[in-house]
Amino acid sequence: MKETIVVAGLGLIGGSLATNLKQTSNHHLIGYDVNKKTLDYCLINGIIDEAIEDFETAVLMADYLILAAPVSKTVELIAKLNTVNFRKPIIITDVSSVKAPIMEAANKLTSNFITFIGGHPMAGSHKKGIQAAKGHLFENAIYILTPIHSCPPEKIEQLKTILQGTSSKFLILEPKEHDEMTSVISHFPHLIASSLVHQAKSWQKTHAHIPKLAAGGFRDITRIASSNPAMWQDIFFHNRHGISNLLNDWILEMTSLKNLLETGDKISMYHYLEQAKEYRDGLDAKEKGAIPSFYDLYVDIHDQPGALLRVIELLAKQEISINNIEILEIREGITGVLRLSFQSKSAQEKSNYILKDQGYETMVGD
Ligand SMILES: NC(=O)c1ccc[n+]([C@@H]2O[C@H](COP(=O)([O-])OP(=O)(O)OC[C@H]3O[C@@H](n4cnc5c(N)ncnc54)[C@H](O)[C@@H]3O)[C@@H](O)[C@H]2O)c1
Ligand SMILES: O=C(O)C(=O)C[C@]1(C(=O)O)C=C[C@@H](O)C=C1
Image (cartoon, rainbow, N blue to C red; front, top):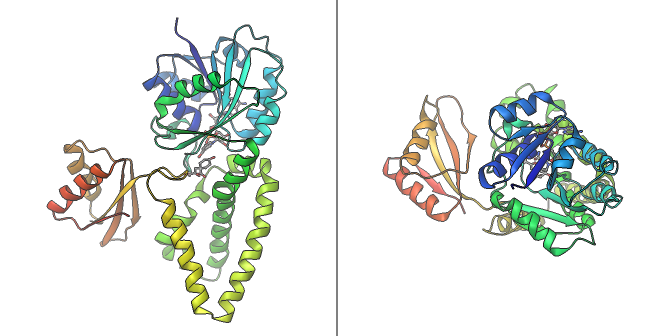
């Protein structure tokens, strides 16, 4: 008989995992969500096999339970598990961006049938909801696992097997270490992105052309400020002490940067920028770090109807799959830059050859 996976919370992350599991595993997939429309959408689109509107009923059917609701709601769902009368072993995981409150709740679980392994796929987007879900969202991403201390290693392997179709790379961490690192490379940058947007908004009162000038750089650094405010408010709340500590460091750093600017010390400023560039460039080294490694190709295109489609068609004809497409800058009537990201160097090289052959100006990313 098929084992059953229940996904509770079918938004961007839960929906992406469910889509992936449906495509890559042979389990009975049950969806639970407080939003009936989301459940209907999942059933109509074949993302789940069955929708169940009662948490306890769904959970009692599960061999694996993936909690993919917002962090605070996930803490509540874990607390609810203590009222469920489990009758068979179950592996429970979650996807929350902050791990300490999740593991604190998990450590209070009493049933011997439960194995709790915290989880956090380090990939996402600024979009939310089931409509934004993609089965390949976690390809090449780091998937962090934070098992409870008593967790038998074979249970961790069992969970990894269930999730192997995501093509992500697993990394086991302590919750504290996880929360410290994600505050540095995910949570705090989000706070700064939002603050930069506030700064621009405030300057617009006296400088009306600000939105028109907000080109590639500003858009690159503030993309994440367009994310789901409810999710981020929850993350900031649960990791507020770590983020606040980073803010102290940041304020000190900004003070010394202000001094550097004001003294007009060009050499020190050059070193400051050079060191940042070196570290940032190193992050993109293939197969390293939490940032999925892609092979980029930059293509000049003109702002004409169908320009983007023509590029995609040329590559599709050669069965080259593109992992990501981004228009970096395009202004009316003139050239803009298209960034195409590929999974492999060979796809990057082949695409470069095809596009150059068709007269496109291209540049291969580092
Ligand atoms: N968005 C990202 O980039 C990202 C990346 C990795 C991890 N995460 C984590 O994933 C989790 C979900 O984020 P998301 O981006 O998928 O959000 P989302 O808003 O797209 O989806 C959340 C889903 O949970 C459902 N939900 C809300 N309360 C619920 C409850 N009590 N029981 C069951 N379902 C409930 C909602 O109806 C919605 O379908 C969060 O914990 C977040 O920290 C997000
Ligand atoms: O790509 C984005 O939009 C994201 O913000 C994804 C991102 C991140 O900071 O990298 C956001 C929160 C998650 O916990 C994991 C991934």
